Length: 302
Image (cartoon, rainbow, N blue to C red; front, side, top):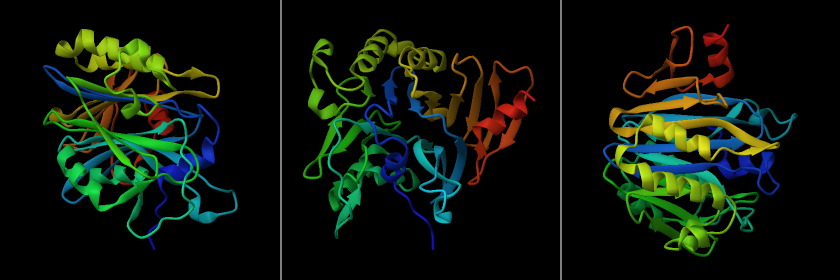
């Protein structure tokens, strides 16, 4: 039997405390289409992998999930939190506060909103995801609540959220979309100085940067932006930063706090290789088993 653990359940184990997860995601449409995300978390192992599903290759960033030391079902399981498929559909699943009381069990026709992330395996665009949503009553599970940022190469981006009663979609209102950790729908259309909630300052910094650089936005600008919205809380730091170029089917990522050492993932060739900042040139194949970020660093810096 295939083990399936929702992202929400995984988050519950590690961060059932306020501000435990402080990720920031974005999508911008200028001369280039660029997606990005800072994964902010406790110090835990990360895995980078590519799965082949439904004729598509899907890149994932995943983190170690272990419910209890005595439950072998959950050992060495990695929960996926951010990814992109080779058709250019992107998803970032992040914590949202205030939390909604999660349902202990799912009824008929109900689904865990964190599982919307699985649309990367079957959908090619935001409209595909949007068409899937009405068929299910989306709810939160026990533990921290989450919301999702979806973006595609057709110029469409949206945030999906639920309070267990209503499922709300917030569409991109211009050339870019930012998601921090407050409900996007509650702040939609408000001036930046009126935006409040967890991650509001990171949201304002990202918004301001994107407004000034959106036309000439590229990989360097992506990491520059992510560097301005890192989380430096002692209990929750930025563990990984990613910049995605969907038209090139390429993901750039780093686990370096200074963002000077960058890896490059190719969804066309299913490999990860050093891009900049490393003395040695390393290339490694990526499949469904993936590779630990720590092992990558050991290969490049023995």
